Length: 266
View 1 (cartoon, helix red, strand yellow):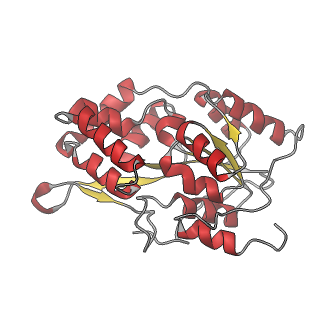
View 2 (cartoon, rainbow, N blue to C red):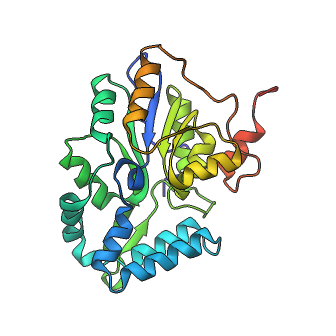
């Protein structure tokens, strides 16, 4: 397990005004790929995935527990087949290609930060010709009796709320580079939103940001995200940095810590 502070950040081009960390499922791509795979490859998968989702959002299980239950439904002896299914069937969110062309064309840092699994994320990025850092969970097929083991290489060493600690990935990037712009949509993104400098939000993350008073820019497709970033890059509008980060009432220890060390008057 990678402990906080061990997230490897690629060198940043000098003078980058910001760096972009983007969620994958429901943000960079249209659907939640894991749920799509469960529905396609697991027996009675659609019903079970729905039950897990209901338990999660009713607060009966944690994000990590929900993810473990969903991954356990996947036939890992068919991992290559599931990766091919992802490449052949999963569409990008509208505006994703244009956003990536803009960022990479201007040498602006971009990374994927996902609670999903690398075995389907990496092939889809390869399909799009994208070579960007990926921070995600992974699966090891070398478990006892040939069972798949869910790995959390970017998990927090003590907190067990999430598989990947997106808050720590955001914080490490912020400490080692320009301000972090986070783009996300769901429950796994809430702690990243609490710790990022600028937040784009849709779906459940949008609701959460509104409820918690987290400054954000709403989006549905990714075209307005690119338009905002382009305006900030060109200096036509100022980058709307938050005056403070973290949330004292958060369940996330990283967010709580950031809230405690806010500058006086922030």
